[in-house]
Amino acid sequence: MPESPLALVTGASRGIGASVARALAPAYRVLLGGRDVDALADQAAETANAEPWPVDLSDLDGVRGAVAGIDRLDVLVHSAGTAELGTVEQAAPSAWRQNFEVNVVAVAELTRLLLPALRAAHGHVVIINSGQGLSARAGWGPYAASKHAVRAFADALRDEEPGIRVTSVYPGRTDTEMQQAIIAGEGREYAPAQYLRPDSVAAAVLSAVTASPDAHISDVSIRPRPH
Ligand code: NAP
Picture (cartoon, rainbow, N blue to C red):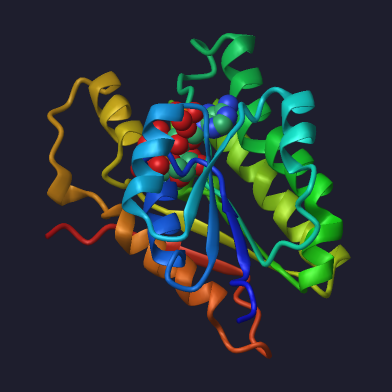
């Protein structure tokens, strides 16, 4: 029997990435990216056809080691991310650097290292961007700037690599630990029904990845519909 196609999902230890990994698992062998080895082991135990791929994406030597041996990759989903917020007046250089390191530089370098494997499979790169990657709101500058940058990265990659499909997904507020921390920082009460479910974002990713081969879904924007 031929081996299943391979998907690598970063940020798969929780949140949107974990949902994306579960959505892909029926059709793909899935590598689950993250740093929390216990959470990755739990996700792998719950997800058929999945195995942990533990690496800190801001450790570029570690990333180089972790991609060794991947010579064919059908789907790469970048869901790992960080959200350091603050107004222009408040935000220290460290907040800008942290957002750019994880949300942009790590995405670019992991993709660059995996390009030969993606080309070999005529693969698909999906980037979990954000509504803040389309327009920036007050207090979100450092995060929004990194998401605008990774949108530009996706557009350049799509133009440069016609054999690879590249999809940017722009979710609004989604019910994850990241959103819980943001709402706590805003001093508001957390109301999950106001937000997207991670599974809804994963369904959008799956629909882009399973689009017929003649179709290239470049950008998907998803807003929460309070339920
Ligand atoms: P989350 O619940 O905070 O999960 C973040 C994931 O990223 C975790 O799996 C974490 O893994 C991983 N990660 C963070 N830094 C890492 C690093 N240096 N190396 C390796 N893995 C790292 O976040 P989420 O809400 O699922 O967000 C996923 C993506 O969606 C992010 O790109 C975020 O910007 C975007 N997004 C989220 C929302 C929202 O409302 N939640 C809305 C729009 C866009 P470990 O902890 O195991 O390292």
